[in-house]
Amino acid sequence: MDLPVMPPVKPMLAKPVAKIPPGMQYEAKWDGFRAIVFRDGEEVEIGSRTGKPLSRYFPELVTALRERLPERCVVDGEIVIVRDSHLDFDALTERIHPAASRVTLLAERTPASFVAFDLLALADEQLLDVGLTDRRALLVKALSGVTPPVHLAPATTDPETAQSWFEQFEGAGLDGVIAKPLDLAYRQNERLMFKIKHERTADCVVAGYRFHKSGPVVGSLLLGLYDDAGALQHVGVCAAFSMKRRAELVDELEPLRMDAAAGHPWAAWTDEAAHETARLPGAPSRWSGKKDLSWVPLRPERVCEVAYDHMEGGRRFRHTAAFRRWRADRDPESCTYAQLEQPVRYDLADVLGSAG
Image (cartoon, rainbow, N blue to C red; front, side):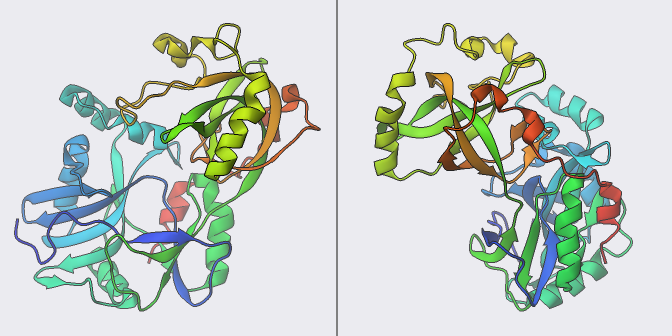
């Protein structure tokens, strides 16, 4: 492989802001795996956000990219999996599997797609120092007439259109809006773009905590919601406390601490089979590897309000939630899934149909 921009490349990143800023290019924020694709003739390499290769996990996508991308190019985009006209992140994570036979099976069962949104090199020209507006024009031309599973990401310079995307596209599983300065050069691993994400709040039961990696202070609180059957389901964690607050929480939660998990709603967390029928903390994961997933059980008697951006499959927080306040006025049994706002369903085909 001999391209003007060679792997590994760490993608340009975005920093969070509260509102859509004016005077920029706007794109949907995709909920998938960020990927840089390198094609030089028959050679195709897919690099992850950290620079590690992803090609072996998406063999069907390698073939599609070889057939649909310009012969020599470097393209920034997102790998996604679509189910029932909706992005499915859980299905995407299943693709990262050590067994080639499993990868082959899933490539047929849940084939991936690639959504392209930036162009880093074309033929013999590197475009890292070219402004965004010109890079976008080259990308649109290079992918003119491209067919699934490769897609051109929709983009607009109209903030009102961006606002409508922000409100509607979540129903197709997207995660917000990205805003990019029009003259922005491509700078690896720098947070020069802006991301605007949904934020909602929920009242959750605090049913345990994990220690921080630095020592015997709280690292994260384990959160639960009751389902229709009255079972407490693990929905995620909240974190980002100051070190002083982490130490205070150990003492604050000590009266609720249980000597053992026996009698706790999540007592079966060490049983791998139990994770098939319930949401429990400490689920086996290819991502966690040998990470210590043990936790301190608490009697599920306290409620806290957290802010979250996105639900995955309607069952868990997609990202770490942010602690807002204790809710002494809330009864734990009243913390159910029913309180969660459900976005209006939106067809992903209509999202991709906005490209141009």
